[in-house]
Amino acid sequence: MRISKAFYIKVSVTLLIVAVFCLAIYLNAFKENVKNNKDQELYIDKAYPVSSIGMILDSIVQDTFLITRLAKWMQLKQIKPGHYKIKAGSNNLSLVNKLRKGVQDPVSVVLNSIRDVYQLSGKLGNSLLPDSIEFLNMLQDSVLLKNNNYTKDNILTAFIANTYQLYWTSTPERILQRMIQENHTFWNKENRSQKLIEKALSKTDAYIIASIVEKETNIDIEKPDIAGVYINRLKTGMKLQADPTVVFALGLFGIQRVLLEHLKADSPYNTYFVEGLPPGPICMPSVTSLDAVINATPHDYLFFCARPGYDGSHAFAKTLSGHYENAKLYRNWLNAQRIR
Image 1 (cartoon, rainbow, N blue to C red):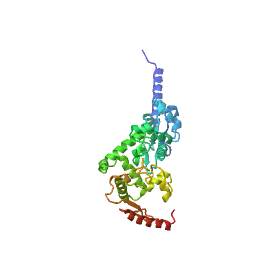
Image 2 (tube, one colour):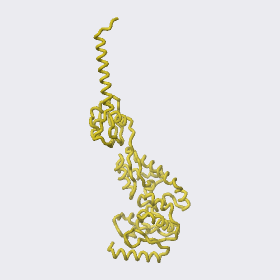
Image 3 (cartoon, rainbow, N blue to C red):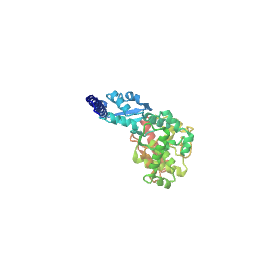
Image 4 (cartoon, rainbow, N blue to C red):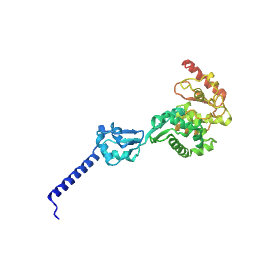
């Protein structure tokens, strides 16, 4: 059987078309397609069909048509939610593969200087996909907290101040479990847990004391001494009488001076009013403050107050009479500076 010349021509043309088509796909796949030739970040809040890829990548890529065609040719079914870092010079193939695999790039979340669960919820809600209400509901879920050995008052103690790499789409419950793991890691390092046992303090107690120390001074070198004062007061049965707890109890975070009228606040957080520790921390303390409690200076001081001046340092005393002398000097200075 003889094959006609026309057949050869038809086959050749078909092969040429296929070759051109394959070449076009190849060139399209490896074509750089990121705008402005710089690294960019992409946030996708939910799963989208492949038909939405052009809309999603419109602010990222130069040509949405080509990447849409490639995604469909590669049979991408769904674009997964998440946070993705898009590197400058990325080609269409790498972009489609990144979205197909759904391998997220974590976001950096800095947790420090947090006052309470409301601020914490706001911080997490601004940094991650779930909103602040979802985080607050989780932090106030009494059943969930009880299952993890926390209460609404002390849940902040689960969070150690640090910078964390978290997945943007993580649920509030998953974030809590991650923080609990980080918490265990922290206390098991540097013999911290054993040191607390030697001081007859629980981790929660240490965290609460550290939160008070955090608000008492910005001078790190003083923190172990101040922590030692509060530990001594607990041991001797004295009330803590910590001004920062009064500020927290009243919510008067802008005041410069705690007055006698403030000390009458009827609150479990007012340590002039109640004995022992408050039911929870008054802030998220720094690691420096936590370690100051863990490594508190052994001494006999029971009192301290601010020194005259603007450096924030403190004068320590072993007796009430010595404390009164220090306090008088400081009050006179405040009055001279007209600080009310």
